[in-house]
Length: 469
Image 1 (cartoon, rainbow, N blue to C red):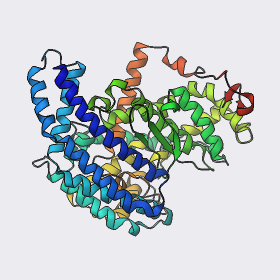
Image 2: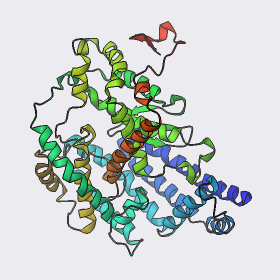
Image 3: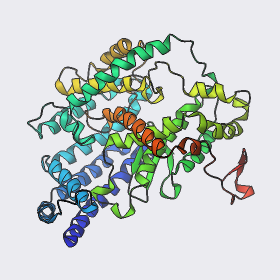
Image 4: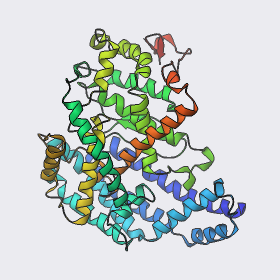
């Protein structure tokens, strides 16, 4: 069994090597690539996607899985070897339903969509990208058809992101949440509005990054195995155990944008960096699901990053980075500002109470598009109508409307958003269980987690008693 398992791992590490090359190309496209490079990049990514897909459905993998399943100790279902076989079987069967040429065609297409989305956002002109998004919708429907029969056309997409979940499961969950959230939002909105003007001053981006980098080091993000860059939409990309990169987006006039996106993406990255090194390149080395992945980002961003105890420690350091902006702002005022509940237009800026309503809107729209109830052409107006009905707001532009999220412009339409709400729920459950088992956790988050005593005086800056190299 060990020999067969080693052979299976070797085959998957070949696939992973191709995935590594794809990830580097994706990252470069989002961070560095010139705007005219999309055609060549699409050709490269398309070919690599096809080759990787062909390797994922290699008959040798199927044969090895049969042999391993026949040898497997049924009583040891929680062993790493059993987990590897189960995970590989899911991957193999899912991949076998889709022809390799689909992967090539779709990857080539996506490389052209992303730069057009960036242009459309800058110019606030949905028509720039809408023909390509219509083609993405066609690809998304085609993908679903490879999995017929299904209960709902969105099920293959949801299952691809959160294994075992279906559209009716998600809708039932969302219905229960909406029942409690809508009156809660109305109740909070009727109270005196919290002043968050302390966050909306001029904050030099370089200092924002300086501060957030030190905080995410404290969280556990290992910069020797990662880096932080800027992109139009924050993301995390894992290229392997030793290379997990994050990007953020900064606003000079809004402190929370970069800071909490850095906390969020660091949560993703810490999860990936925390996987076992010996799992690198094999299915066990992947996230359990996108919902679990999001549980880690939302935990660090919100449960830790917006807690009072955390800021009792870090707020004096933040004040040292921005003395002019925050010297006359006390901790309680700042704490209320970062936890203000108020319906807004932007999902990534949303507070914890209204956030899931943003997710529900997007989920319903992608299901409507897959069902044929909503055309891409009508998406902007449908978006504005839904925000008016659900949150009482209407964006002045499509850039703050249906163009604000990258998801439909870098992957398929379907299964892209439910993971955020699943992550919110799981993050709360994980944290509650952790604190139940270890009541000292809240006190630990209020302690200084990192200090560098080895900083060179000439290459560092003093931030409230800490050396920032």
